Image (cartoon, rainbow, N blue to C red; front, side, top):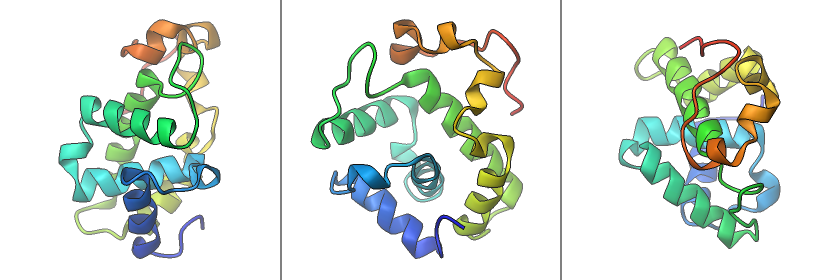
Amino acid sequence: MPFADDAAIAHLARRMIDRTLPKAEWTHAGHFAAALWLLRHRPDLATPEAMRGLIRAYNEATGTPNTDSSGYHHTITIASMRAAAAHLDAGGEGAPLCGVLDRLMSSPQGRSDWLLAHWSRDRLFDPTARHHWVEPDLAPLPF
């Protein structure tokens, strides 16, 4: 279990928002923990454009440049937010986020390479997909 309780998820999300989260904690599970918390508690920050600004600012604060090959990736962010939203909806209103996160991390989306079942590597890592939403070219997203 990556997070013991919802308070741990909230702590991570708030530190990501205020840019004090250590880069080492911004893991695959950490990304999804923040996404779930934002979707439930700060939907105003869970929009595509708000996420773009939030993650780009976090990256800059932790020394990660936002370029054509590094940092913020719009297609990955939007796909991941859709995955998080689907798992949150499936968990039911008021379900503990730590339980939703555990189920998400046990699903195909819990694998760090899950997007490669939907996008070819060349398409996903093209600068266009980093800056704009690009539809999958291998298989549609399941949600």
